[in-house]
Image (cartoon, rainbow, N blue to C red; front, side, top):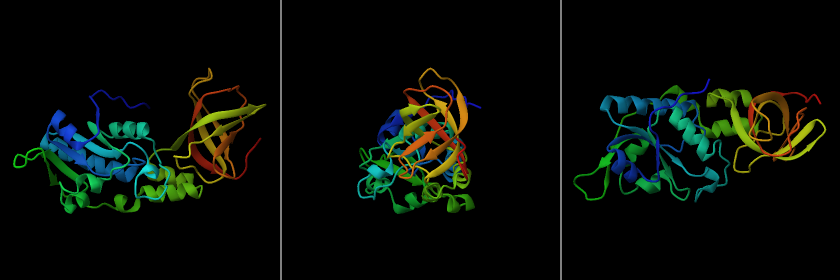
Length: 260
């Protein structure tokens, strides 16, 4: 079922721009790669706090995945920016602050907010009347939950690297999806490339849901995809002609073998 979104949604490059545009707000502080079940629990608590205070609610993310952030090792992302924005909006956020990939939450807030705000993960942000041009952050206490201690982007990435799609999907609260680009087709099969910036499941065969972005095909079909040995491409047995375009591949479960 498609989620109906009717209220306005804004994207900003800095918390100050958000405050200047929409006023004091409740802000959830995290990278939100994956927008998994633990993230959504945090977002739900931020939304509840915003409703109590009658303020807008927003979240922080990054304009590119963690593999592009300065000072971190190369790590592929679970979600691209467009997908993260869609998921954050569906989670009830009124706005998102999308930080440049070269920044970090700590670096952005070093001179503006105490460390206990970062530990709280939720803060009320407003202009500080006692300091011209500065922002004031009021930490909102967050009680840790079992979900937040167990669900993590790192753990989801690990399960995908092992081919454990079922557990990864449970932690995400939805099926894991990536976009693939058609590279070559043959009689009854299709070869598609997957983006290096996205986490790719371990080599092997998977039951998948394929959505076509172009090529004159509408809707989606269920198929079996093989992730190649080097993990960079997908091979799908398809009985429909596809000569170009992009595919959305939703991973459902791992298969023991591929039926050709």
